[in-house]
Structures are given as C-alpha cells and as structure tokens.
Image 1 (tube, helix red, strand yellow):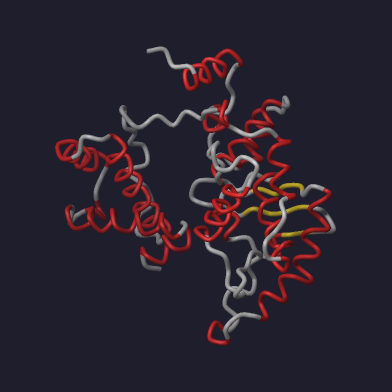
Image 2: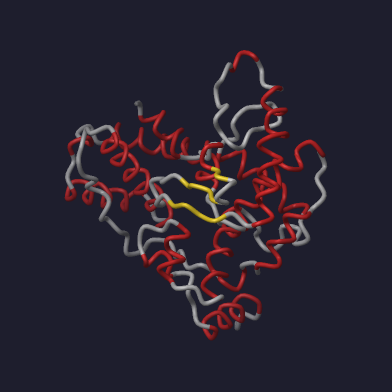
Length: 296
C-alpha cells in the first residue's frame, strides 16, 4: 500500500491531503527518513524551530511525521515509531472548554430537525444519532459497514483507528427502528442511484450519499457543519463533529460513570485523554467567567 492510499484509508480528505503534503516535504528534506532514529528526528524538529515561530505549525509537522512512521509500521517496513514519544513543551493548548459543550437534551434536539430532502431523512437521522449517542469520530463513521450493526442484539461495532481503540456499543432503543428502516428501505434506494461505472464499490459501507457512493469523513464533517447552520444554536456555539463527541463524553462523566468505562466507550487509548473531560465545577465556572467577562 502506498502512503497516499494509507492516508486516504485512515483520514478524511482534507486531513489526508495535509498530512501527505507535510510528509512529502519531510522526505525531500531528510533523505534517510525511513531509517531515522529518535535523536535524528528530534534534531530535525529543532531545525524547524529556526524556521517557524508558531508552535502550532511545528506541532502540525510533527503530527505528520508520526503518521509517516505509523504507515511504515503498518507495512512492516519498521517495527517502531521513533517519533511517537516526541512531545513539544510549547505545543498548543488542547484543553477542552467544557463550558462551551452541549447537554444531552440539547444534542437530542439535533435528531428532530426537519429534513429538506425527505428521502434522506432516515440516512441523516442515522448519521447524527451515531454522533449524539455513540460519540463517534467522522473517521469511525466513515468506515462503518452494514455488518457492524446487530439489530437483534442492539449493538454496533466500531473498528479501531490510529487514534482510537475498537469497541462494541449499545444502540439506543429509538435507533433500532431508524437503522432498520434505513438499511432495509432507504439505503437500497440510494445504492440503486449509483453510477454503473462504480460497480460494486462501497456497497458494504453503512453511510452512502444521495448518489449511492460511500460517504467520506469529509462528507460527514460537511454534513454536520450544514446541520449546525440550521440548528437552534445557529452555529454560534461552535457545533461540529468534534464538539458533539466531546459533549457526549463530558456528559457521561457528569452523570457519574466511572472514568474507565467512559474511556472504553470513547475508544481512548490512554486514561489521560479521558481525564481531560473531567473538570471540577470551580474550574468550569472560572473558564466561563474568563471567556464572557474578561478582566482588562
């Protein structure tokens, strides 16, 4: 598998392009990159600091380098990722702004909005339900296949990605009917509209477009952005795939669920990732005060 194929398979369209661009620059600048060790990559990152002043730029390049070595490991070209342990001391803050997230009740509103195209109603409700109930990432939703859904058991299997573990999650009772109608009635009609030139490509994927093609991670992200514009929040509160997922995880912790169970639900590889969503009330209140009533 080529690096481009790997990126397309594991990341959404725009992310794959961005990683591919940075990886190409890295390989052009570092001819021995394939065999590089930890110290050599750290030295390379040091050179980047003399060229770029923004920590976010260096962080983006480092993320691309890590993905490159993940690819080499997947192809058995290497058995280690020498860049995996490199962390930037001045990396951009990634604190989750809990005061900006959405309650369970607010997320439920998204499932009941009126659809512009009636024949896509069930597809769109299935899609948004995966985000507001299972807290999926667009990449995870992209690679779902029909066989991952077990309506008799009321479960859904989420495949592992480079960032998240695989897991089997319960479907909500109201999802069962949605999925059944979509899989047995709506989805076959969408597939029937597919161009003959595509043959059987993508017929296993759960989420398909109006033209019968598999929805990419980028398609799914764009759909949620459009949803945000017509939602009761009007896009003013930063409604997107990421904040929906963050809201679901945060709400589970607020409800008192054990952090290890929430970690398994979210597919987080490390407890520290889940821990970012746990914040005491004083810290949450202070963050809100800082945002809406900044002291000059």
